[in-house]
Image 1: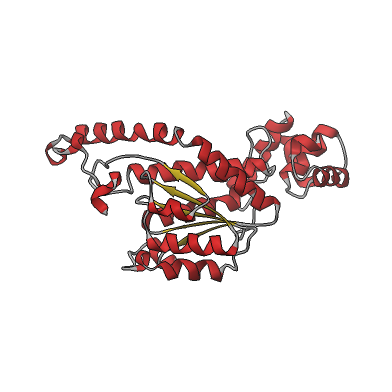
Image 2: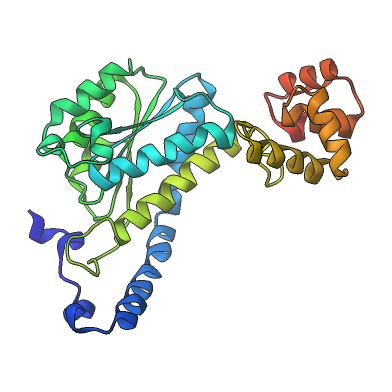
Length: 294
């Protein structure tokens, strides 16, 4: 099967990779990477459908699950983890699973990706429901761990999507929505942490960011639900208030305190010159969308 996958094919532009100068190696890698955004562009319609599905899950009180093995699994977990501080959501709302468990983040767990039952067990441990969306990630598009998870999710009634880097991927058969980004042969044959991994990272960025915009986590281009879990993020929160409300630092800081460190509320208080209680009511009636609240 592997010889039929474009991600496993030899790249004719890099057959002499070990004879190239270091600069030529880097220029070649850079040139190959430029093909990735164009490959993704061809799948924008499919990506949009996945985003809409994720938004529907969130609006219904459901969750988003990424599931993959190796690099794919690590990228899913990375995207999931970053949603918490960026968009102020709970760790349960977006979750990532990797074949072999969290130990596989830093170590290769032999055989884990070949076990379809492990994918099922991981989703069962999360008490998957029909309200949730499960996105399987696999460069080859044939990872048993991921296919097992998608099959189970479909049986439960959850929305299923697949991200692969080969056309006509086996995994796509088990998903309601299939994103197939043909990134082609890697610079280093079969090393799908390269172009394929880059493509997956970009698409995951799109899905999580666009979905969060769709449920009111962004005003203008500002992350107005950011969690100020450290000094840097507390300062960023104040700067967001400054930008959104067009006020100076002292005013932003004062309203940030008045709003009990809630950026959205501070913005509404300033722009509508209303009390904390009024701002909260307006945001609640607007489902958290600052623009609607205004």
